[in-house]
Length: 295
Image (cartoon, rainbow, N blue to C red; front, side):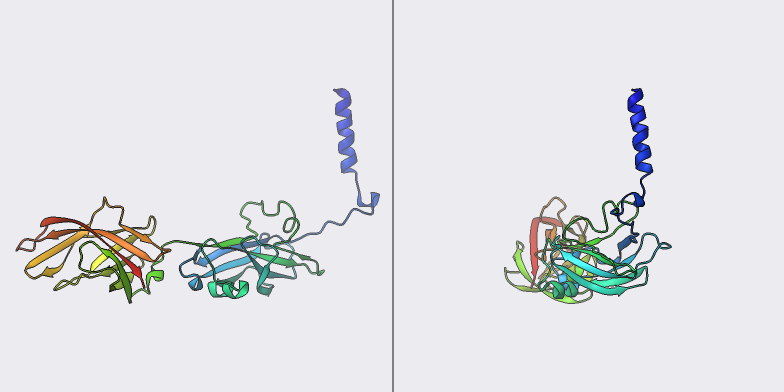
């Protein structure tokens, strides 16, 4: 054991006493400023239903803002982890931090194809030092800037935008507009499959339609983006001759849904015939789903 301890101390001494002058082939250490690339605002993901409408702001800066500065950053992007095809987003960034914008149309132009569901775009920076030495964000061999550089707490040398299928009302239509939709199915049989119905886009989570009843009032559909479900609060929506009707959604139905990738929505409506007083609850006829698809 004593010999092992002695050998251990000798090894520490030899390592700690090593100097560059002992071996002229040992390279000088080079300080490379650690970049940060972070999302700031705008779309956190790319809507695969409307990729050209994607827009987001991100920032490029320095992890140590008071440390050594590079000569410049060149902001670059790769698609689907393909480091053999690196595209330039913004050249010659010299102010840190700097906020920049990326759009779906920009990505489409850079890579020569529309963004599709599942596409992933990683944004990083190529670093050029004052001596002209360049370090790549996405090298074909090795790790960007050196092993372990992305490990400090709060650091982020790249940021990713991915094309996903999430609900976004603007994909269904501009807020405040009336948009034509095709009826997929209507169990109440007021509309036939393939008929066109006007749908009003009310706000980020509400849209509405009407049945072809007399004195028709809008049936407002509420969308829950967290789980892509729909619901309808009770409304007296109109009459067919002397018969007045009310609807609400059936909470037990699995047909209360939106499908963002297909731009469809459906709701299972419980139909009630109201008495002469027109006061609820009325007589329940049953549950009659209706579904639509954006034209």
